[in-house]
Image 1 (cartoon, rainbow over the protein chains, first blue to last red):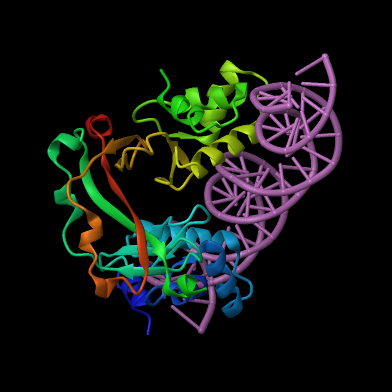
Image 2: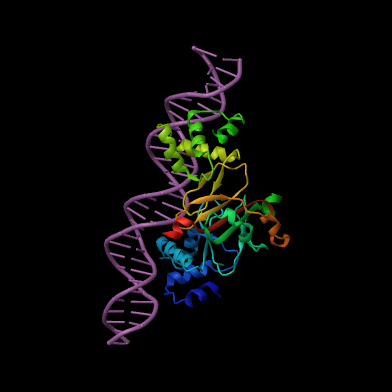
Length: 138
Length: 138
DNA sequence: ATCCTACAATGGACTTTGTCTAAGTCAAGT
DNA sequence: ACTTGACTTAGACAAAGTCCATTGTAGGAT
């Protein structure tokens, strides 16, 4: 079932057919869809859903902290439903495949005070780039 | 003087007024301009330079490995001339200011084999997010 | 069960960012 | 100075995303 949907419901989020469909489409592991991909899949389940609604809904999920935006490639933003479990991304430079990974260590401690310029740091994002086995063998 | 310009010249890059202007505009520390910002500043020095040329020139500098593309926010790509010295970025979530930072440690060693999914990893990109002193006091 | 109302969805115009092309221009070697 | 292939240009085009006035509806109140 939909973990994401459960979490959203639990926050008293007003439920509509459109929001349910977006949440369903997005739920799962190693899911990193663009807004347009989400829209395409949502339309398959609910033909009259509009693009603007998909954008709005994704934006709200991000604001609620239940979904994370990922900008791995230079193209569209992607949406990752696993906001609850901290993780980083591994991206194939050729085909764009994304995997969730869980590195050891804490990158926050790698940044000395002298390199913080007075910033209050709240978050670190790490992206590993390389070639996936599939592309390497081709 | 222009470090970037020197490096490009040293590679036998064909020099034109337009390319010189783009290189000059981009040169320096903590410089992270968008393509349109580069264009605006280039126009100030060379009014007839076109947008397409700025895009082309930036793209070539990236291909040559002399400039790095950075996608910190959800908006336009930014161009960083300090490709020779490895560094990461610290971004203010409010105003978007970017600083170059040099963390200790190597994030590559933080990713165990079991988390590599058979990928050959070539690069790691780390982005620290937070609030800059300026925005914090406001 | 029905009514109300604030919140949500719609769709189409608009903006921003970036790419492409055909034609003209120019840097650099001879 | 000539030639040539690389560079530049303007503007059309495309993709990704935002905005807004209008219409619809979820969910609490009656």
